[in-house]
Length: 449
Image (tube, rainbow, N blue to C red; front, side, top):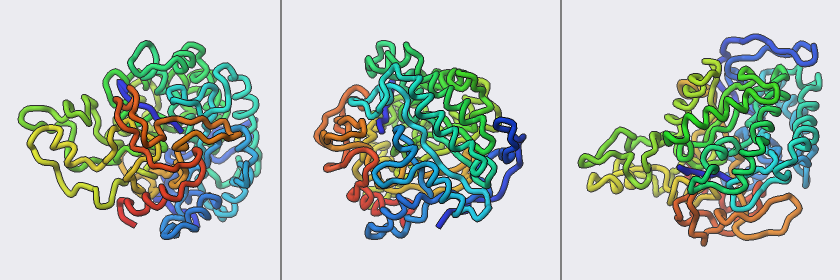
């Protein structure tokens, strides 16, 4: 999965919240929607991921954690390469639920022209194949979720909608230094907006489905030039193809990314010898230095542009722990603003735009419901140990190209300010198991295991 940048057993989670009005699908009564689907609910543990994690030395410490199920190509709906399909996951979730409310986390990720800012597309559909996206991807998913067995059950289906798509239309188009012809094409033909709107409308019409739109991360959308324009594009998509803002439960940030949840050793308001932290090379005039502050602020920005005031936010904490020996124990020296920030920041990436299989990363906060104001849950939407992409070109029949941001020898591009990629070597194709990465995530977990 490509990230971009800049001007660039099941888990119980909390107490039940208030119930909102019920929605119906095709005249059939469905379970009443709740304000926060994670409150008072178990969360489904994917047996496929759990088995791989448990097989690793030390992996049993986290193998019972809930993770996202990635529907990243049409074939994934029915299952591929021994991996379970959607129905199999839902049947297993019903078993795990024991009749109690249980969240199933899906990642809906197959837009036409997907990953338009990546150096190589990881998507199977061409830029114009919006009809195929609707009829062969979204419609079959909706048909399965609508079956009475699932729609009238204890399951709560949480969908992460199209990772990294809508923010690309803001940051990587229109002659910006980070622009790509592919993103310009997707902005011009409108198929990202149409596709997201169609998915929201079709899936959000099912009574026990909760849609969360991907909203990038602080090191991508946190600049003034990107913040409100991204909220506007999300509003555009949420009201396209028959959808309404009421079919959006919230946003998700940091999906499959590494941005620190909370930087304790400096704030965006600090200054060193009269120079603001925002002027440091790391912060680079961003208004946010971590995911929690960004997610809370961006959620409010969506309310400001017309979304319901009770929408929530999820933060993917699967790989943003940044623990281990390299974790700073306090602020950096106040020699200058860069020494101060670099000495104290938990996020040890070379650049905040680096997104592929990052060296030194660790498991972050464990999944948890309602952990902070405006946040519905911390989640592990990206299953730890699954590769972001291969370190070198690997021929495959999965539509997965080689992106040099996953190559540890790559010296960068405008989207990471021409820095080294910071990627681990010898990585397999995206979504495939990467044992060396999983071991590093265990070692650097914060909180420690």
